[in-house]
Length: 154
Image 1 (cartoon, rainbow, N blue to C red):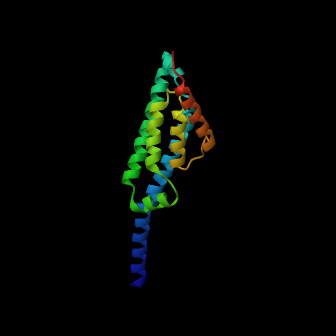
Image 2: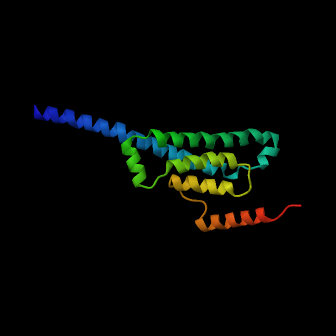
Image 3: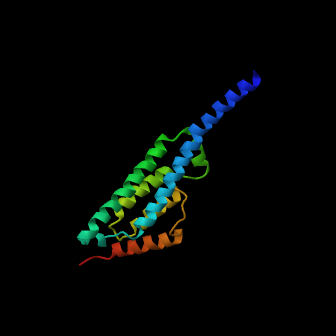
């Protein structure tokens, strides 16, 4: 009798852990992998694709994909189960920052003003991915960008 009851209780506990923590965690890790892949893929997409008709479709896809992933990251942030939310916050993930960064990256793919690098850094830090730029490199980039803006144009 007790062994049957114990087996049922352990089965229910296993199902709860799987449904409310393990499956959402696996989904998050898969999303994180896709985000990293997208950042690497869009690393060489830029404004030059806008001028070439045959590359315009590639550029449009490169703009759409980070935006879609950003929406998925933000939806995961909003809809995460409480065990996953606790896990992500304890380990330093910031899905809100990463989602906004992906949407910002989508908006800045055609720009050469350094905002693309900043957005990429937000995503990488929010998702705890390897960073392409150090904080010092980003500060230098921002300073050079500001100095270019201060020069009056004729």
